[in-house]
Length: 561
Image 1 (cartoon, rainbow, N blue to C red):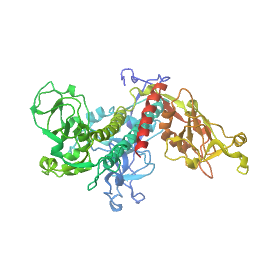
Image 2: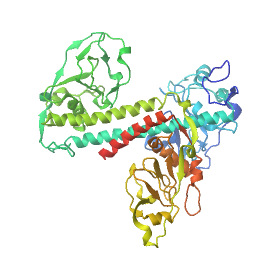
Image 3: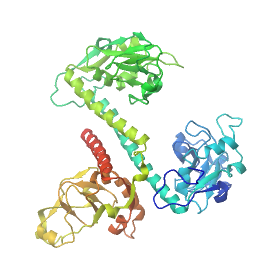
Image 4: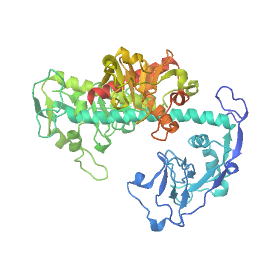
């Protein structure tokens, strides 16, 4: 915010009015309604990371009971909650909105408030995710008697200044940020799927205890696996170095469980003493091995701190890096000495036996497959952390009907055999499951059947089948030209829109369709209703880049399922 001019640094086109600084108390009211009659039994908590959440979900158990919550405040949907508990991500405590769509209760330690219609709730919610209000809190409040809680009086809290544009601009900002959050969530889901897939592949590509071969193997490899002592596979390197010209790796530099660096090591000061390593060595953090600090560096450097530096001798180094990530290795590493500062026991690990393929080519094939998964995991982590795009406001809000033609379907008479068992694919909603592509329908119609119904032939490669009833939002990309019955409102994307980009955001399209669906017998979204949905679209080049990334990811997940 350029406070001198009362306008932000960047704005949506069409908005020129100055922003107004308002006090929080001008449009909000503290909630003091207590649960005296015991009408509500669910206790909420306000987490800096997860927002307003059921206490049962957050702690895995209730820490309150019906007898001690009569004095708790009632929190209605869309109420805001301030939690004075300090954390790294919330240095003066978080303020979050109740998005649970239900009421519950909260401890009087929290400040609960509602806001009126003069401010957009979603705008305000995102405002509180910034640090704009922190300066006021630090100036007017303090950490109090307890170092983990922030202290500020109610009267002062509601004096907090809030920068507010006019309502239309608030809504435009809120809508853009909601779109960004949806994309971040999508990336997080993809990231989490990949992490689970990698864990599954590690389990299946290495033999289970007592078994001679893994559950799955690459084609062409049939030689038996061997039981090899770790000390026969690798040397533990211990040459010390304090060479300031070499990059230095410490525990804090590694993303736990991912084996990637969280910073550019060139920005760190050198000179600390550690174990010298070379490109292709394997670094394993022996201190608190459950933290899973491992690295496969492709550069020379110095490992500072409690690391083992392992140099492969009788196996492929990339395979060794995968071996240390397996459950069998981790179980032994966590049989450690020390209670406060547990360390993996080298004498135990080095003398333990592990299953290893005799063929180095199979070792490399396993390592390469898992490395591809790691690259995608890292990619999604970076995309999520960077909020998917660098300049979000260059994305354009477009109606879905402006990016695609919405096409319904039809059904030939089932009493006329001449209309059926032809060569034209004809889909019903029940045929769409988890698959990305639709290759062949269960039933097919003849040209006569097509000519005598309202079905439209949909082009291959440009059409996303979208179910509009009896399970709204099931999707698949057409690989062959086809038509559908009336249970679809399919999207035929235009030439300026990437089909896989649109397919990747169908979760949001589905959510919109479910909200707008209507009907007495069953809920259904019309083509007109679906076309009216507004979504953010980047340029065609950026759509293609994002779509290509998701396409690669979905292909890899499907391949390993």
